[in-house]
Image (cartoon, rainbow, N blue to C red):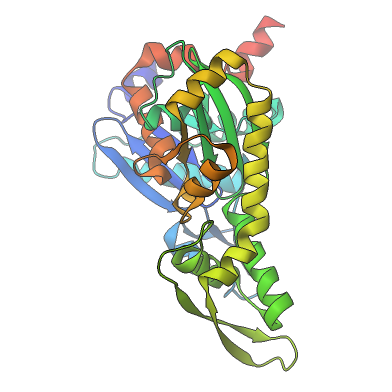
Length: 351
């Protein structure tokens, strides 16, 4: 009763708990938070020093007693207590402007396809402990499809490829459900590691993760570019131990990223191989949709089209597709209840 009363003054939220960034969508307001999923913790006192953008600035620069960590790995909670505090911070931040002393919002959270029951319960419990009065868990790939405005309720096949930071999810969707899917542990993070390994093997240069990510964003590609791109790559010379700078071009970085791109394409082919022929015909006609931050890699859509002979298009603003999907579901509660995964509490009652 008290929770319901507080709920009238709270703002319903859609949350995309990403490995790299946590995004929060507020009903009737839109996307209000897009901050790194990073928390800085003082190990001596147990105190949280910073969350989000401020904490990300500390990565790789902290003294031994301060740890800047990512509590979400591959869309799954790796540190429950820190995730709970991070969620509470974001929920309170959304309600700062209002008059709610104790916010009790309804929360929709996108979760990976291959999540276990224990991991699912951890997400639920973290959201409830952070102040949510009701938690709906939905498959993140479904949220991305809704955010990309795909007709998920129709009797037609849609294939969506969500290239995130920790994982790539490939799913065939029809009639408000996932027909078949595949999850790969190859995505933005792995691409950064490819660049770090390439720099080590070819130039004897040790790169930091942030430098590798900057290189991927600025000159990374999956297909040949019309105009060549170059960039300075700075790191530590492994032979001398001194700072070193090397100029690299898009061809070299494309070579570095080649293995990850091939694995993503192989995953798409494997998913298509087990898709029913009727849905394949729809997919061939309608094409495939790319979402997630990895969809911004230059020429990835062209590389997939060449390999599968099926047209691929990048969704509008692919980075926010999933969180926008959760926001659209907050405005369509019947559809939300239809596609939401049963809570672990409901499943325990049935047993």
